[in-house]
Figure 1 (cartoon, rainbow, N blue to C red):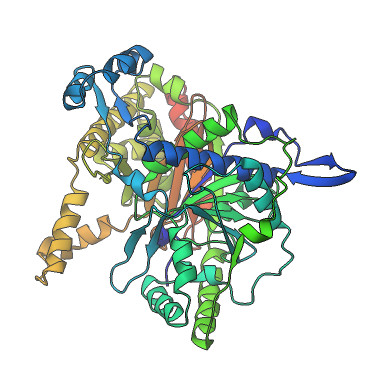
Figure 2: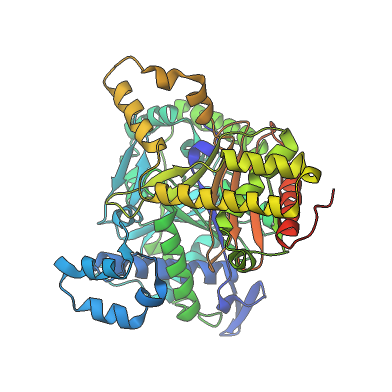
Length: 550
């Protein structure tokens, strides 16, 4: 059985563009009839156009490079960018290096578009066909495609895209009896054999159209009730209206809320966040359509193609089994969120403390408060400073956090406020060191994983280290964490990576800290967030010179 954590999905719920205002529907008069142009249509059209603009800019070699600025006051300026533009490529890196601006690897961006993870026996295949000019649209478990780039490489007119989306939404067909999307949530080996069966039944052409599509657009019928329900929908949805193997999918609810769900094997959050930020900025500053835009007078029935599949009894049984497993898994998943409003990045900076270190400390302290122990903790760190760099692990659970957490939770009366402050400072300093080491590929996790993989691939006996209970326990990450802060994103999260773990997405903002946490029944996520919030209360009280309230 494949858990949601193994799907490696990351949800990002995007903020509304300015064009959307606070209304849910716009009714427009045309030729004496009323035409409903919903926010779902507006949002889907604008974000689709902006994503294709981003793709064309990237493929033309015109996308601004991803740069890590150690001194942004000097390097992240128009003056520097104008000067470096005229420096020969062979030496431009050195000019950037001199003022602490480091170009980051962008090789993952190639897999953003026209890409799919194809299930294969033993090891999956990453497939990319950049000649595809169409998008994949899913509605009520049905698959549709239409070209979004013409033969001259130009983007289809936004009003025509709007018309095609409207045509798809008007399709009265009920969900198919056997909904193929569930197969992409299955165990990968099971899905591999079922995909082969699909090919043998004559579905090669339709599968190729799905695989080669620029990206997937999911038009959902759900309406946002609250951010927890919305988080569930963006992370996994009901299964029938998703194709989880696509590199990324834009998801639009009926009321126009938008999110991104992406398959993780091809790349990391750096590339997806860049896409989201650029799409958000583009749709805000120069939206392709507005609420007054009318759908083009085109015959969408001749342009939009509905994909049909040939299924035998084996495939039908496989789909029903995948659906049952999917429903069991998602019904067991809980998601909760909390916001801490007493302070954030601004206050912590004045205290000369790392905001990320404090957020991680609150998780360690919260877990100790709830379960009276420290557990293996994972925090991802990008290694994009290196060619083809992916990630390294930061290990936030340290002797410093353990000492600090026990002092706060078990022995607060034995320590002065200044002592507790000093412990927080030690945690921050050491976490900063670990972060720098990980970013510079000086961590140990990926190195050891590579050695383990080599040993297995060569059929060698596993060295004792990899059989040691400590190594096994260390890689059973009960706290799997990742941070995300962007003006384009409201929430971001993922499922636990082990059955008895927490999946923790968090963001430290200027004046508040937010968490969205998931768990299976083995853990009480509501109580965990209460403990985290209490821990933040205590930490901020101490930093403000106040005693801890018991």
